[in-house]
Amino acid sequence: MDTPLVGSVTTILEWRHTLSQFQPGISRPMNRIAVLGSTGSIGTSCLEVIAAHPSEMTLMGISAHSSWELLGRQSASFGPRYAVLSDPSLEGHVDTSSFDSRTELLFGDEGIHRLVTDDDVDVVVTGIVGAAGLRGTWSALESGKRVAVANKETLVVAGPLVMELARQRGGEVIPVDSEHSAIFQALQAGQAREVRRVVLTSSGGPFRGASRDQLAEVTPEQALAHPTWQMGPKITVDSATMMNKALEIIEARWLFDIEFDQIEVVVHPQSIVHSMVEFIDGSVIAQLSPPDMKLPIQYALTYPDRAPATTTSLDFNTAFSLDFEPPDLEAFPALGLGFEVARRGGTAGAVLNAANETAVERFLDGRLGFDDIPRLCQDVLDNHNFDSSPDLTALLEQDRQARTEALRW
Image (cartoon, rainbow, N blue to C red; front, side):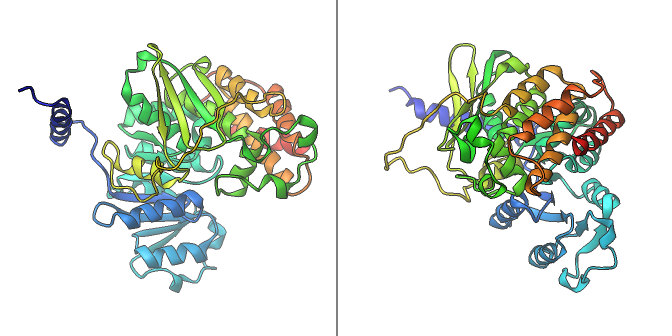
């Protein structure tokens, strides 16, 4: 009697897993973790994942920009080796009794560098919003760490340089964004040369279906009301303009080493299919799960293995539908900027990101209209001194100049 196929498959998977534990060069799950931006939405979710796996994961360090009260409570709960406040002006103005006695309190960029380069740290989660996350990511990769990157701006600003640094120093870049985690997981179904395209899904944000005229009247309060995800104000506004998807296009270009014309975007309001990969034979592999960031965070921390879920699962005993529709590029011109920058490369990503960060700040302060955000970004992008092969110093200078220009606009 033939052995059942399911038994054969199980045996093969178990055999491959056993081999992976002993073959040199195969990635191990890493459990000594530093979380940059631990007081934000990604950071707090990451701490929940670590707390759910106390025998596999240890928190070595945490950081925040200025939220020292919450950072102190996190220190008291987990007792990490380091806690860092990246705002150096807070040194001497913090109630250190709020922190666990085992935790050393550090400040500024030097504190971040010391945390992410510590020999006892295996994986660094970068949950800092904006271009500010680049320095910590860079230092961690220079030390050969695994970086679980939730900061898409790092790859938007300096994608080619970051990925090359990881290759040179033996570091790893594992995506935490739900869309890029989905692509990362789906890519394991085939080889790089077999990929036809990747399809990023978008919820469409709070203004899906709105016309360009309607978007001109959007207020900050309306833009901050996202229908699916709970995020910080900057990311929520980016979702409303669809600039977040533009940045994800650029991130995917460098993270997965694909061409800009291999990337597509589809609006999927249920936020259950987090992204898809189509292979040259026509097969489409998708990753589905309820919209909860703890799943991609956990996968980045345990890859190449999986751990028991800390989130709810899809209920297939209850009827539900999955809808897909093309994005409206006329109403949401920010999306087109993502394809343009992914095509151009060079300094374009740094300039777009800097202009957008400044524009969002001005919109939230009531000094700029919602529909002015992509217009400002296009104008600054069109008029900067483009460099096709910049080094890190040139990128940071272009970032500075773009912010200055955006303030003048």
